[in-house]
Length: 303
Ligand SMILES: NC(=O)c1ccc[n+]([C@@H]2O[C@H](COP(=O)([O-])OP(=O)(O)OC[C@H]3O[C@@H](n4cnc5c(N)ncnc54)[C@H](OP(=O)(O)O)[C@@H]3O)[C@@H](O)[C@H]2O)c1
Image (cartoon, rainbow, N blue to C red):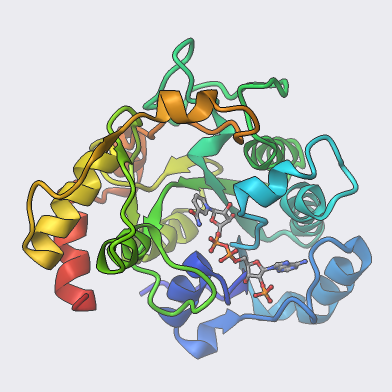
C-alpha cells in the first residue's frame, strides 16, 4: 500500500473534498484557506518550513472556478482569480522545489481554446496556446498560465487535467455537473441542451485511484483523468435522465455555437475533451466510459 503523506490544498471544494475524504487521516495534512493562503508566498514558505517532515507530496485542488465571475477580472493579474490560479501554484511549486516535494496541480481542458481551428479532444502531448486571445476566457487563461509556471519551476510535478466533474456529494457549496441538470429537470427549468459541444466528464471518485498511482510513480508530466470517450451535453443529459428519472425524449436541443455568438458571453471551450490513452497506459488503469460513469453515479448516489 502507498503510504506517502499528502498536503491537500482545497480540500473543502467540490473535487478536493472527495479526494480528501478518501485518504486516511494519518496520511494527510489538510489545512484550511485561513491557515494556508497559497496566494501569499511567505505564508506558503513558513508552512512548508514548519510541516516539511509531515508530507511527501502536495495536491493542489484550490482554484477560482467560476468562469463568468473570472471574466470580470479579464486582464487583471492582480485580481483574485489570477492570484489564486497562477500565483498560488507558482508559490507552491517554488516551495516544492526548495523542500523537495512532489506537486500535483489540478488543471482543466479549458487550458485549450476548444475552437474549430484547433479542436479537441486533446492528448497529453497537445500544445496549449501561449497567447491570450478572444477565443479563451480568463479562467482558462489563468489555468493555462498555472501549468506554465509549474512546468517552469524546476520542481517535480504532475499536471492532472480533469473536466466536468460530477458526484461531488461532500460539497455543499455548488452542484456537480450531473446534479445541476437533475435539479433543473426536477424544478421544470431544463433549458435546451447543447448538441454541438464535445466534452469528457469525470466521475470524481475515479480521480482518487489515478492520483494515488501518480503519487506512487512520481513521474513528472501531464495526465488526463476523464472518461475514456467523448460525449455532448445533450447525450449526457438524455442518458442521465433516462437512467435516473426513467424519462426519454424530454431534452430539447440547443446550440453552443449560437449561444456563444451572443455579445457578452464568456468564451469557453466548445470542441474540447481530453484523450486519456497515454495516461491510462502510464498508470496501468482502465478508465470508464462516460456512460459507465453515469451508471456508477446513479448506483452510488441514489439520486
Ligand atoms: N469544477 C469544475 O467544473 C472543474 C472542471 C475542471 C477542472 N477543475 C479544477 O479542479 C480544481 C478544483 O475545483 P473545484 O470545483 O473543486 O473548486 P471549488 O469547489 O471552487 O473549491 C476551491 C477550493 O479552493 C480553496 N481556496 C480558495 N482560496 C484559497 C486560497 N487563497 N488558498 C488556499 N485555498 C483556497 C477553497 O477553500 P475555502 O472553501 O476555504 O474557500 C476550496 O477548498 C480547480 O483547480 C479547478 O480549476 C474544476
